Amino acid sequence: MLNQSLTGSVVSTKISPPAPAPVINQFAEITGHAGLIATEFSYKKDEEIYGEDEPAEYVYQVISGAVRSYKLLSDGRRQIGAFHLPGDVFGLESGTAHRLAAEAIIDTTVRLVKRRSLEHAANVDVAVARKLWTMTANDLRHAEDHMLLLGRKTAMERVATFLLEMDRRLAVAGMMALPMCRRDIGDYLGLTLETVSRALSQLHSQGILGFSGARQIVLRNRQRLHSMDA
Amino acid sequence: MLNQSLTGSVVSTKISPPAPAPVINQFAEITGHAGLIATEFSYKKDEEIYGEDEPAEYVYQVISGAVRSYKLLSDGRRQIGAFHLPGDVFGLESGTAHRLAAEAIIDTTVRLVKRRSLEHAANVDVAVARKLWTMTANDLRHAEDHMLLLGRKTAMERVATFLLEMDRRLAVAGMMALPMCRRDIGDYLGLTLETVSRALSQLHSQGILGFSGARQIVLRNRQRLHSMDA
DNA sequence: CGTCGCTTTGATCTAAATCAAGTTGAGTGG
DNA sequence: CCACTCAACTTGATTTAGATCAAAGCGACG
Image (cartoon, rainbow over all chains, first blue to last red; front, side, top):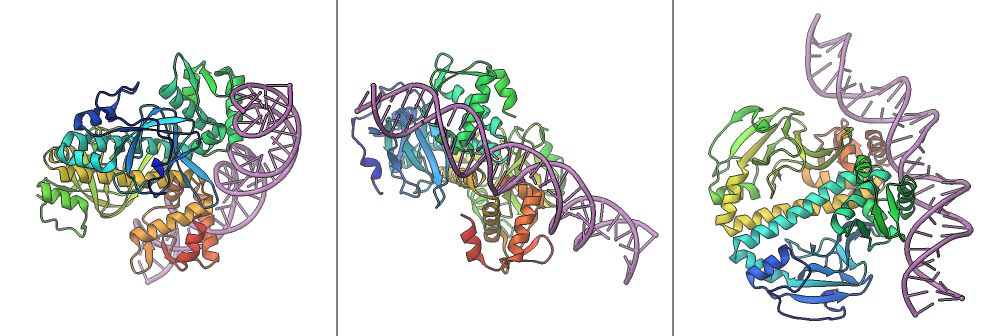
């Protein structure tokens, strides 16, 4: 398991600073600012990036593709805590181990830097330290919102919240191409895949969304969806 | 709402450094190290400490009593994200607003420091910055564990997990005195108060726990409880 | 152009919610 | 000190949202 994250197929390795990517955020900001060494790496669909409780050697940023972070119970029940889309940083830990496992949902390329080198940069530069704290605080905010969803929202409310989240995060030209299957959505929302499917069908029949293929969705009435998200 | 946290009954205000409290943790560590000004303050049972989305002027530490942090849906459904017990820091935000509301569960005394002064200390001292990050990361870890509970555990598993958590955090001489009512427990576990009560009754009838009053609980078989927590 | 994984839809089941009384016990006032 | 009161808790009866079981569609890819 240790170094498992290095067993995927190598695509390229290069020094980063002027990031070449369609990714314009925080992580490049940090790697640029602190002169860290970033490497690119790719994973096939369903490949594990790291396991739960595995030593946290690297911090990752999605360049292309999509990742799920999750916990498992001993009998296989799974809770997905977050989906990571292009630009998102994941696997950032304050301690030495990953609290959730991570897998590529589809073929995915990530940028990665050694956790130790980020921590070193944080010791030297308060702005880096601040950024790490802010990124963890953003993950916490998402988790707090998601606890409310999991503990108290109905199935329809959960699906509405999910659609609005994905619309915000990955809609291009008013359409979203979901990278994940119905089971992943269910394991994110604390529902079964059948319940997710039924909720989507109902929204479709009400004209609130349109499909072009099961995973290509257009929201036709965001306002009504907002009114359903509780 | 602004400054609401100053409308409670004042008990005392004093400069902190050599903390007089039965509380030995992180927060005193920071206030001592960075020479911050800490104030004590008290809240009556069910009094609001701050509201959701209110400006985060202070960071708090429980000296005595107990606090619930929660979110509400518009129709009143409530999700308690965490209980804060003596020694715990709460209300720490990386941004400028509180993401959850906080209320005293019973009469409670807290120590508080201005968020701005903590942030200033973090700009000067990397160790303080690191501590703030670690505290937020610990909250995130708890939230991640709780998402698994809320999304995937059965009612009995949730109650077993709750009992083991409270046993770890507040048992004295093998007995725990719960400060919160069944409804609070339900709103923490994503259950109704009746379901919580039934699960506790079942554990009682199986001899796994003993009661001396509804909120005084002795765990008689932690191992069986662990085997039920999934 | 066939196959297999994904998705949808239908039928049935069930864990937990809801509705509804009682019971208990901590705190109050006589 | 005792009795009263009221909120908290327990327990029972019934309902229900979502899970589970089952069987077609469909569509992307080899």
